[in-house]
Length: 71
Image 1 (cartoon, rainbow, N blue to C red):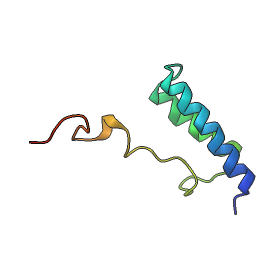
Image 2 (image 1 turned 135 degrees about the vertical axis):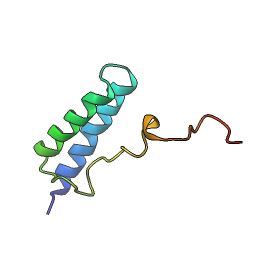
Image 3 (image 1 turned 30 degrees about the vertical axis):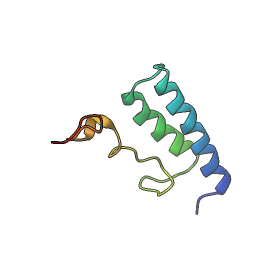
C-alpha cells in the first residue's frame, strides 16, 4: 500500500511540472519521462490510481476541438 506522504509529495511535484509546462520550460514529451521518474521515486506502481493520467484530456488527442462550435 502506498504511503500517504509519498502520494502527496508526488502530486505536489506534478503541480510543479505542470507549471513548468505552462511557462514553456518543458514540453509534453518531457512530462512523460518526468512523471515516470517521480512515480518511481515515490514508489507508485504503473497503473496506480494515484498516478497522473491526463492522456485523454490533452487537446492534441481529441478528435473534436473544445474551442470550435459543433454544427
